[in-house]
Length: 44
Image (cartoon, rainbow, N blue to C red):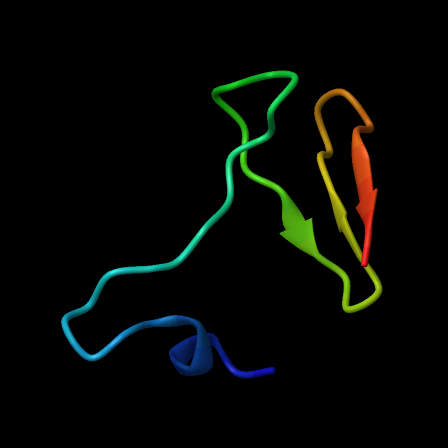
């Protein structure tokens, strides 16, 4: 996935914050969302 695919038309980025940490963002790995800080994982 190219970086420009992550941005909206207005330049904003849609990200989901980690519910456990609160200040870290979840990485999208296709089949799961993962926090690199606390290892929280949401399976999709």
